Length: 214
Image 1: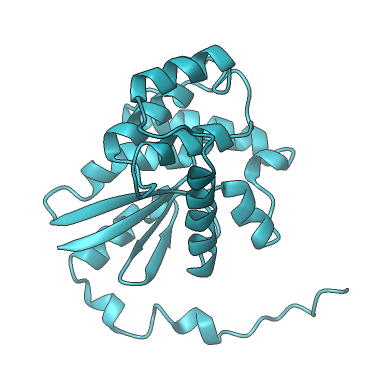
Image 2 (image 1 turned 90 degrees about the horizontal axis):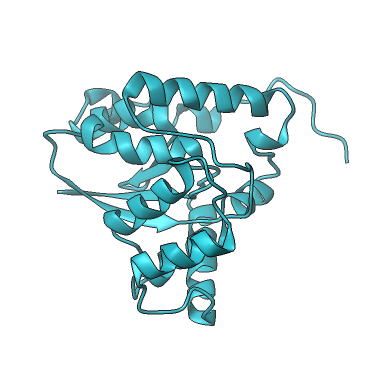
């Protein structure tokens, strides 16, 4: 049985859609999933990137796209009252539900639905308190150990080359994005393509652009 590490941040609508789609995409296969919360903003800063919601034009397109994808897949999704927002308290709450900082699927589903269903403010104080009561974590989200685990999860993702969410790691290979789920399934099924040089080919491909100016 293969183990998949699912890197996620609840701020990402694509992570929510991938979370909902994963059981259908991998139906019939034998696998287990470890859900690893990470701070998307920290991943983006590490790689010198902007999130789609930080780029005018791309922000609006992203929201239209995820609303269409949800509609086309039959997944309930309403934009929260504000987006983007700081998801740090939601991430810490999820981490607090497990001693190793790795929430189970039920905990992740509860937080994702809190954000992406109903159209309310995801970080409203009263709603966060209600969510905390519902999840009943054994530790406080503000505990230093919880904060340290979330940072460690994010640092580990950076070290593995994870540059965004959703991302799925199996056998040291990282598959990025909702649209990578068919590729992930093909790998788990043993597609011969992965035994050839295709996976590592980009590593030796030179860039045709001039070096960036300092």
